[in-house]
Length: 246
Image (tube, rainbow, N blue to C red; front, side):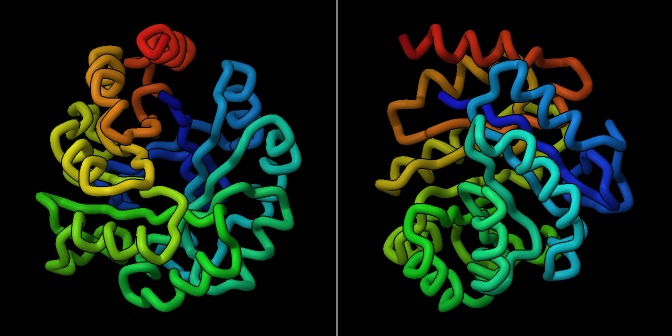
């Protein structure tokens, strides 16, 4: 199981939010490129980037630092990015810079035709980001609950050709309250494409819990606040996941 360090970008800095609230941000570094190389050197096999400003603006807002990160690490590991991706030109620009996967979230829910076009134009490079609370999909930086069921929507997007699904439990993200394993497994069991868990990963017990259900279709887990605040040692967690998979 992959453990995927997250770098959330706000105003060019590496931050973490609590439950997606932009005003509740903790700055962990003003040098995201240095953070990216740190996780690479710690043995990360994939990196997760979020353009938080872009997610709220609906267009890329941290392009310069994203380009710098890709220049440093994209040759060493796949990098996935979400936030502000609303058109095919933006996807093409990011892939040309060395990005491996784009994550389409709000735009997939609001304009599913765009997601279908993206999957057709860039097969193997499009991940769907689905954020939900109690199974109810949220959009617009988690500000609005749509009333749509996350499993039903994921099945539809799977049929469009999405590579995988990043599933975030928005009630737990940034709260260090543990992964919602039950909800993640329920989604993974309903799909044939992999699911990447996001939100709440806190300690080695969470790594053990996810590793125990990896065979259900859970490819990995994104980790953010825990590895920045020190409740989870990234290298130890990845080593444990590898040992449990052996």
